[in-house]
Length: 226
Image (cartoon, rainbow, N blue to C red):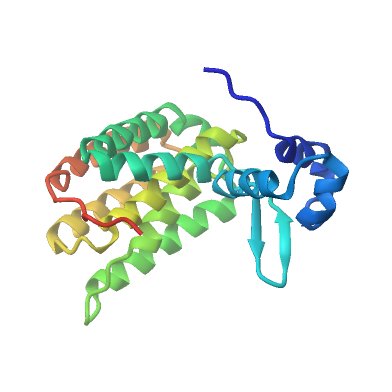
């Protein structure tokens, strides 16, 4: 199946060095020789792809390219259609983290490693506090920080979309304390290994940690996706 770029997408490519506000559709219609109705449809497609945002009174604005929005749109639909599709995407995400572990960890700066330590401390404080709070922001932040220095928009986009879907499905509210405590014990050991330069030891901890996702795969997915 061949995908052809619309007139609006071609316009965005030609003006990519001028990220920011875009002319109104009425003006673009005359410039591109395309009807306003057709441009509205093309604009909506571009919005789903995460290429633009359109707000009342503020107009249309071109955004920096990210691979995550179109992936998230597709896998959100797929996971609502068949829960097994989330498990398949989760498996893909695990393989991506394994494949890029050494590249990601070896590229981390000292400030990144410090951030990882702080995320672990924050998560532990939430789990040990009263009331107990689920450290989802820390969970997402830790995994994404480990791979943040990888110069590959597709890897980053896939990992980001996984965590966005993770929130949509509701796993970010998973409240089994023993499970969460075990997860963060692994995270703490992983971060310690990274800080010591023991990337192979950290890699084994990552693989052991990934197996724990099987403990929550049997939780029914919400019937309504927002």
